[in-house]
Image (cartoon, rainbow, N blue to C red; front, side, top):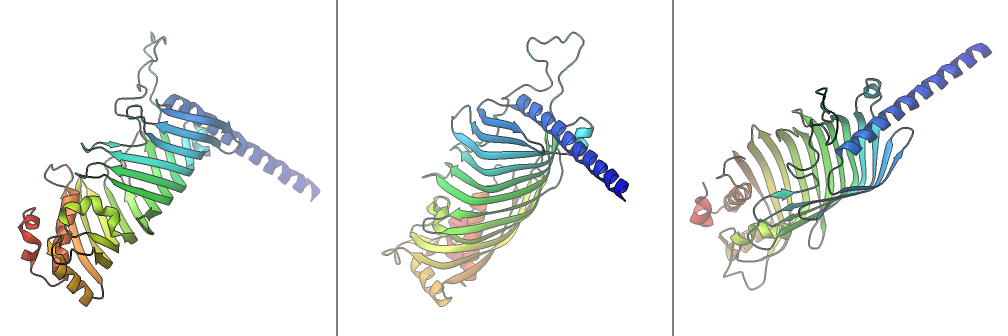
Length: 356
C-alpha cells in the first residue's frame, strides 16, 4: 500500500510539473507575441509571468491622431491554452480584463474612433524588419492568436456621438460584464457567442441593458436579443430633438428587440414601451411630439394610464446610402405611436411618411 501511495504521489507531482511547465511555455509565447503586436499609443506599466497566466497592469491606449484615451485597463490576465503550447503555437484559453474603461467617438463626418489601431497604422505584417537579413527569402510570418474566451468584468463604456446635427449624444455604461467566445486574430468568419450586461446612466437614474446571442466579428453578421429596462427617454434626446417641438421632461422606456444582420442586411423587430411620459409645462397646446400635437398626446396617454406599448420593425441594407438606422427607427416609432393611440396615420404628418 505504501508503495502505491508513493507511486501515486510521484505521478501527481509529474502531472503538476508538466502543467506548470506547459503554462510557462504558453505564457512566454504570449508575451513574445504581445511585444511584436505593440502598436503606437499603447503603453503597459507592468508585465509579469505567473505560473498559470501572464499578468499585465496599467494598460493605456491613446489614439495617435486625436490623442484621446480610448482604453484603460487596471489589470489584464491572459491564460494560455496548454494544447496550443504543446504545438508551439499561441493559443489563449481565457483573456480576462478587470475594470477596463473603453471610449468610442463618432465624428460629425460619421467616422468611428475606438480602442483599436488606425487603419494602415502599426507594424507591417509579413514583411522583413528593417535591417534584417532577408537573402534567404525568409519573411516574418504575421502573428496569429486564437482566443477561446474573452471576459470583461466590471468595466465602463463611454460613447460620444457628434453626428447628431446638434449637441452630441453621450452615453455612460458602468458595471459592464461581457463574455465572448471563439475569437481569432486576424479575424475569421465564425459565430462567436456573446453575453453582455450593464447599467446605462440617465439624467436622474440608471437603467439596465442585456444582450445575448452571437456575432461574426469579421462580417458583422449577428443574431442577438437586446433587452433595455428603465432607460430614461431624455438620454436619447439628441437623436429625437428635431422631431419634438414640445419638450419631453421625463419618462422611461423599456425595449425588447431581436437584431439580425445577414449579408449586411438588418432585420430588427421589437417592442417599445413608454412609461410616465411627461411633457414640459407651457407646451401642451403649442408643440408636437413625433408629429402628434402635445395636447392630444397628453390626453390619450392619461386615458391609458400613462403607459403605452408599440411595435416596430426596422429593415434595410446597411451599405445602402439611403438607409439611415436612426431615421428609420424614429419614423416607424412615430407611426406606431399614432397607431397605438388610435390616431389615423396622417396625424404624424407628411414629413414622417415621406421617409418611405
